[in-house]
Amino acid sequence: MKKIPAYMIITVILALLLNTSCTTLKEDTLIWNDPPTAADTLYQNPVFEPDLADPTIVRAPDGMFYAYGTENEWTLGIERVVPIVKSKNLVNWEYVTDAFPNRPIWKTAGGIWAPDVHFINSKYYMYYAISTWGDSNPGIGLAISDLPYGPFVDQGKVFDSNSIGVGNSIDPCFIQIGSGRLKHNYLFWGSFKGIYGIELSADLKTPVGTKFQIANSNFEAAHIEFKNNKYYFFGSLGNCCEGLDSKYHVAVAVATDIHGPYLDILGNDINGVGQEGTLFLSGDKSIGWVGPGHNAGLVTDDNGNDYFIYHAIDITKPLLPNGATRRPLLIDRIKWVNGWPQIHNGVPSNTLQPMPYFK
Image (cartoon, rainbow, N blue to C red; front, top):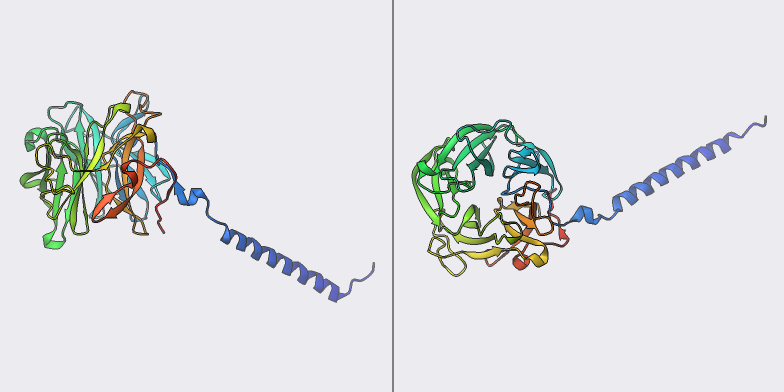
């Protein structure tokens, strides 16, 4: 066999190595420069379905978002007792589990509605309502978990309508203000019988002091957001659950003190008779969504943009299999104009929108 000169072998090896190196560099460069797709940068409502009514949202220390909704049947015969979904970006959600392995026993009848979850003292506190339609004595309870996905262990009743003296005591909203000795805990609640607030003791369960009213009987599902040294009131009006005929919508008012008065953009106190705040978000069959409302707290992305999380009704699929109103999860960006929040055109978006940005 003819002997191959050593220099030729070395030349071939070097050529192979150089070719491999260049190929790898080229592929890495192509991957690095690959432009993002619409799936990476855009989204379109809804962001979760079939249903996550009356949502609340919390961000865990690992950066994941967890959202919780009112008890409902997504599939006939399968009750979701406060469903929990999770997401990295507010857009791509997946179902995790139900919050309650065991139903609270302090009230025997009623669904678990309108949870409100907060990460406090390294634990997850969930205020929730138990009620039936037309309930004469609904109430609000508290459950606590070490983990955002539960299980949540019931701590019992905070109050009911009879004990607190407010009809239709549902739709809790907790807010903590101040720090240290100046820290105060407040719970707001109410549904078409006035919106009220009361301070809670350090155990975050026991009411102290005297309740106070901040809004009239036009409202339910109140949420108080502290921003720009002001207290922004978001409240829902109309009927949430009339399917295609729902006129549910959201109004806003603002106060400089948590006790109020909460004023609309014209200076009217929403605690006054007939006052309905400044319209913020409503539905329109022409854009495919009706009945938007009962929002969670605002979420700010890493670019400083605020997002509004809420439910609404898809006119093409207005009902769940059990006949209840179907309320998927939607999000939309808020823009602040002269200190007032606005959503483009004042209706849910129905086209591709820029996604929230999180590092």
